[in-house]
Image 1 (cartoon, rainbow, N blue to C red):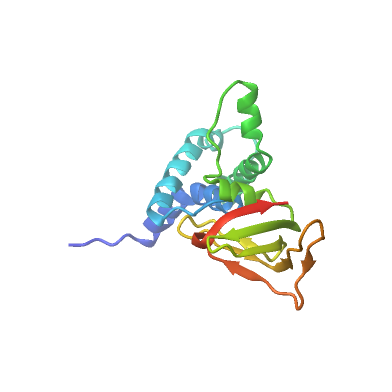
Image 2 (image 1 turned 90 degrees about the vertical axis):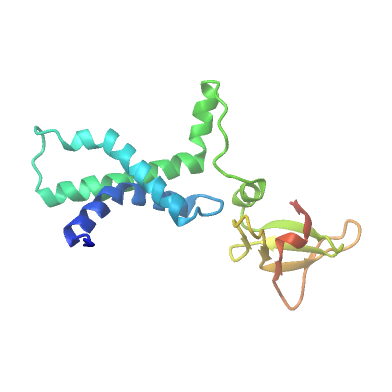
Amino acid sequence: MLNFPSAKDITELAMLLAPGLIILGIRARFKEGAVPNLKDRAIAYAVTSTAYYAVVGPLFQVDAGVALSSWVWAWLHYVLVPLAIASLIVLFDQREWFYRLAHYFGFRLAHHIPAAWDYAFSKLNRGTFVWVKLNSGTEYAGKMGARSFASSSTAERDLYLEEVWQINEGDEPWTRMEPPRGVLLCGRDIQRIEIF
C-alpha cells in the first residue's frame, strides 16, 4: 500500500529545506552564470540547509536568554537568519571580499563567475560602448545601457544592444543610428567583442 506524505510531513520537509532554499535562492538572483538544473539545486539546498543547521541550529537550542514566542523563534530560525546570511554572502560576492581575504592569507581561489563572458559583462558600467565583429565580417557598435542584455546561458551566448551606433572612419566619433534601433546578436555568430 502506497502511503502519501501528510500535510505535516510536507511542512516539516519544507522547514528543513527552507534555509538552503532562501540562502541559495537569494544568492542566485545576484550571481552571474547559468542556473543549475533542479536536481543539482535540490541537492545544494539540502547540503546548505544541513550546514546551516550544524552551525546556526545550536544557537536556537539555548534555554537561557530572551524569551520569545515559538512562532517568532520559527520565523527567526527558518526565514530571517537565512535572509541575513544570504545578504552577507551576496555582499561578500559582490565586493569580492572572499578573494581579498584569501589573497591576504596566500590562498588562490577559483572564481565564482564561471566564464569570462559573464565576468566581463557583469563588470560593465551602464553606457559602456562595445564593438562586435561577427564571423561574417559584419560589425556592430553599440551602447550597453540599462535595457541591454548579455545572456548567462552556456547554451547560447547572445547579446542585445539597446542602441546601435555608426562606426565612422578614422578618428571621427561614432554617431547614434537614426532612427534609434537595437540589435540582437547570436553568440554563435560573434567572432570578437571590444569593450570601451
